[in-house]
Image (tube, rainbow, N blue to C red):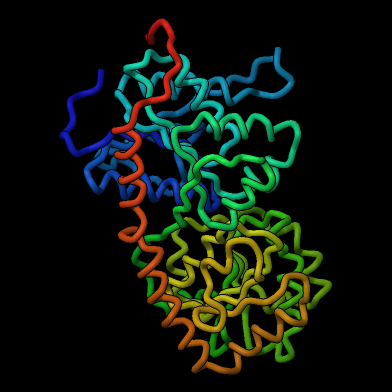
Length: 392
């Protein structure tokens, strides 16, 4: 059994994808912040989240062991995850199991709850981050399971109002959903801005940053075509912080003659060093539920040029904290980028406003308490239980 706890602290389980990506970053930061506020936090996943520090007070990691039995064509993760969720919930008396991304985390959480007696069942909070709705929700092989998981969850949150409306439209879920925007807590860079720019070979050029996992919807092809259309090619350098292998775009880089304009850093964990060295950011996605990378840049006074899609307008105030352009036109994107390259005063003005708004609306102080309030509200309400014999 778990140890006793102070009456005002909670025991919270968190499951997320541990790899580079917005949902994992947000979930990990949430857990760290909750622990700093006195709660006990248990991460449950197949590997340690990449931004989760070792030996942190009140933070625990439980690894899910996935066996590759020859009986199965593909290794199964959902069942081992649900068993580990049930085990951790039972042993540590979890109050809440907060799962980020519906597939397979929400379905595994529901199964784990069915393994437990009523007095051991945690409340389940499911946070939707994007493609669990927009991609998998539209897939007949996943959509009904996601719909069921949302109905059975004690609470559902989305990272933008746009994603909330899409979840209703795509999945047909019309139950309660609370919009709690993404947040960010920047670390302190260990090197100076000048040192990082020297490492990147940047002099007087405007340094444009792009950070993403390179998935097709990020439209890296459009990103490259757009910067290739900037008339003064000596006026900028593009830094790509790639959460994956950028070699897949090497042919595009060569075709567009961008070999001397692009610097790539792959799988960077401490992005703050590079963000502080940048002057602006560029995002050409065809769909985004929020775009955490824009927010990260905002905290370092970097205004973004970004496509006017999905939840991005909830992050960028067009003409005030950045510039929005229609998706698909490399010429229009290049023109907006050129505007900020040429007009340094405007670039700095937008950047200063972006930093101010990021702190006001999307800091941990602005957001974390909303999750705490949600957890406490659920715990005080009658539970949704599945009656079973017991737990081991």
